[in-house]
Length: 257
Image (cartoon, rainbow, N blue to C red; front, top):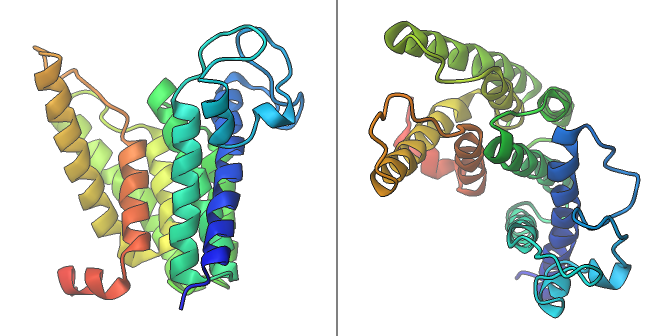
């Protein structure tokens, strides 16, 4: 039976982590330190007091406004905190409080930050992907889903396989469809989830990306659909998290090879 207090603690810890991920997503692309200075309003620069920095609750108490200058606070902040909290709770339900839970929570955090930055700037910083690959390889010693060999093969084939897809797309369309950040992100995913994960993750990412892309072109009435582009990193991240959270026998039944 699930310990409800432990589950609540996992959720709350995830929301605190989500608050830090918001800082990372804002500062990393700007080349700012994620440690110093402390949290402050991006509009007026005033420091944010601890009681105005409580995940989820402070957004409600402040009515989505900075206490100092009254500038609006983006809804994305509590949304990321909530998403991170739910992810932490789901990982706890699957793995319990084990090294696997901690490792995959770090993995999910990296995917969330990479996705937020990719949505804003259409880049995935090497500061996330490259250390993440090394952490994934080191984590393979404690990872119940992979062995050190399948982790290494997942990283190598993840980057190499997506590189071939990108080159083939460029050959057909004469323009880039995937960036180097996507290749490194899939290598990170392969390091954590192993070689077997790559086909399901890519299929999920491609399917959801296509659906969203078609919906955008129809909603915004984009005429030249060939030049319309959306970042692929968030869909790779979504595919990876879905693969991680669903049981292995589910994927084995879909992909027996």
